Image (tube, rainbow, N blue to C red; front, side, top):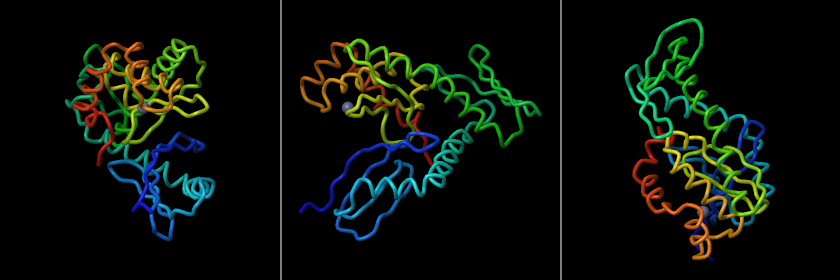
Length: 233
Ligand SMILES: [Zn+2]
């Protein structure tokens, strides 16, 4: 028997899709933890997937609150004059204390007004809305190019940029909105290629290359800059 086995999974909670790393080992109890590397669920070997999902759902409200607080905390590092990444461009953050909550992009700046403590969530909300308008569209576009209809949506978490289920549901991490479009498109192409091949075989990579000739550069970009886009402690 191996010491432990790991599997990346996602679960659909009422408010959002949550990616987690499922780890099976010789432990006796189920545990759910959230850290800078993402959500982890540690379980004994004998627990069924259904039991695991019930366990997560029972803690769903708590989990979503923690994830939202973390995303907001990430934005908190953003003070007036700091940088917000949007489609690979550095926007300079300008904070205006005020009663009215508003986020507006003005050329190379992002103007945010609102009560001081609300500003991180306003920025995260603005980025997430932009992501919701763009990312699923890019995923569907590449899905169409491989001749598959897919449902496309957003996911969250700090461990993965995208996912594709056996049923053809593609999810892209909303934090990709900070990356340039050609990098977003690589992740969309990668997940679309999974609509045909649910593995990382040579056939899969050939499909990725056919969809996105600069996939190597995009992967390298994510390796180098991805941490800066993902939520951190
Ligand atoms: Zn993959």
